[in-house]
Length: 352
Image (cartoon, rainbow, N blue to C red; front, side, top):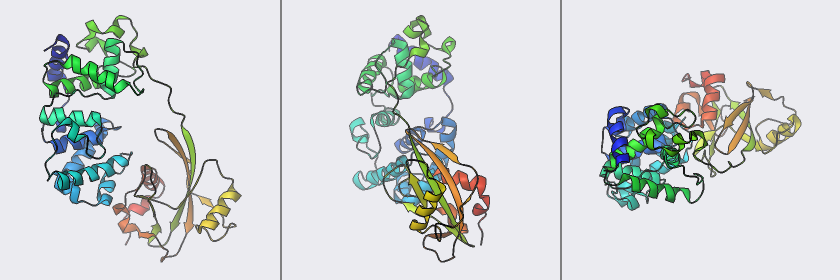
């Protein structure tokens, strides 16, 4: 084992966090944890992981669930395509692989929603395959350790860092080495406040020697964030409210929301009233618009949503009406769910 690998693996064995997905070699549970932890903090991800394992203890249970059930349990994690892909991949495993999880790096990547990073994690953690894992933590750790100037969000970065990690791994146990790389990145080699005094390879870190830790990793300029305006109409009857399925492609595909008018630019009140009347959300363009609460800003990776909500009374038999007592069975975007929690908690009181 190389000096580098020996140092970080020894550190990992003494300092690793106690996380439930580290106590198993079950590829299903490891895969589940990796999908949940993408773009999710460990503290939040742990709770969701435990909920999923309890409700769907094996791949058959997940494959046999409805997409609605999966999205509903995922609610609040964001990036809902991950949940849809998770469900489809479970069905792949059951129907194409007979319920047996594929056990090679290349075959694991054939699963829906599984890329090189996730495939490497599953292959090494569950099957001890010699494949380096390269995630955000590893990018940051290696770029500082070797002063790599390649932007980590460039097209050639993954291949370059993959090869560097592979060389450093040497003959080290793949699972321990990969876990150690990720853990050092998460706990020591932090983005803005690296704990260099505790780093097991500090003496050989090139960025530390030059006092340039915060110059790495190098990144290309971010994509410009697009702003979009959402005007939601909360059509409420005595026993429920109207929800619409968002079936077009996007982050909230197959989730439910209030009837909405979307616009790239802010709408004046008369413009909004006219569009709402045309859509049948209000009786006519002279209907007063009663706003609930303040404008809400919901930030996504490349989009900033400015949402406003308007109260409208409607009839019991209106199409799309969902009874209050059934509301929790519908997967809602976090924006809608948070609005209900903060502005209309009575909707979740299971009215009869």
